[in-house]
Image 1 (cartoon, rainbow, N blue to C red):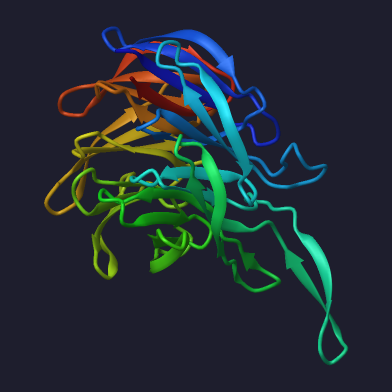
Image 2 (tube, rainbow, N blue to C red; image 1 turned 180 degrees about the vertical axis):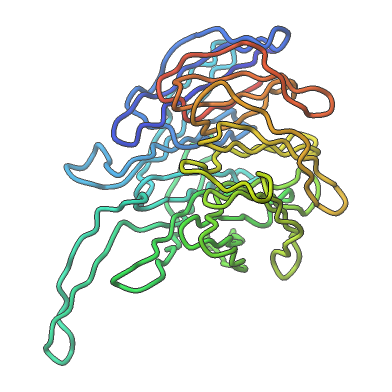
Length: 382
């Protein structure tokens, strides 16, 4: 049974694409096969298991089909079970700038995409508006952040855009607080999707009207202001959601109920009294396949923190802080056998491979995979 690892370059101003590697679980090593889609800035991917279709985002502001702007793209590709090669099936605009995440509907009927919108220092557009009284005012606008819903075709490729939800900015015209859609993940039963808004520090829940093909907003959880919820992961079998925060040194856990989310824990990553230093911000987040260990990466300190998960209460307990050799980790992925943690470190142009012990603790394997601007990594098993 073949296994593959894919490493993507995150380069919003250009490309870099993906490298395909044949993965050997017995040795924990990867053999380079080929490079594909060099024009892509790798955002995030999702695998549709029935057809082994990989959807991924091209996280940019400029669509190559447009002279200016036009936002990013969402691309569907078929994975070859023998070589691991990806063959483009089709692509669609993401209907926003910097598409950051794509998620599969568990029934393989829909795909959801989050558009991050403007980056931290947006390029605003100044417009002049005439008021009803004849006076004039300035309006400062930036790219939309959003959640987009696509239908899927029977072969797993992307179908029509069927709905769009605008993530509204907050604040004042003089000091706006832009929304940033960063992640979307389905609940274990597929009935609910959680969306993190890094900009306004919210977690939104959506359902899908499958007949009409519409997004149905269900509830909104307001996180601590300025915390910046980044990535989220649902427990594989329990109604528990785990979140890391880009702008606060904490991870959180929530219980999903009929009325929405209920916060269970908000656990600090670094010791009390130890201030966060410049450059510290969380990035990748991944939950072990059995839901017992949660890993989060923090840039600046270049560490991976491991938390044990209480499956009954959802509480988190930090049990290891692992110091990486690589710089600026951005993404985490666990190998199909659950024995290797892959850390894509953009600052070192590599993927650092760590072994996972039975208790979830991490150790260095000494194996590194070179890849320019390594910003995303995932595994695929046939």
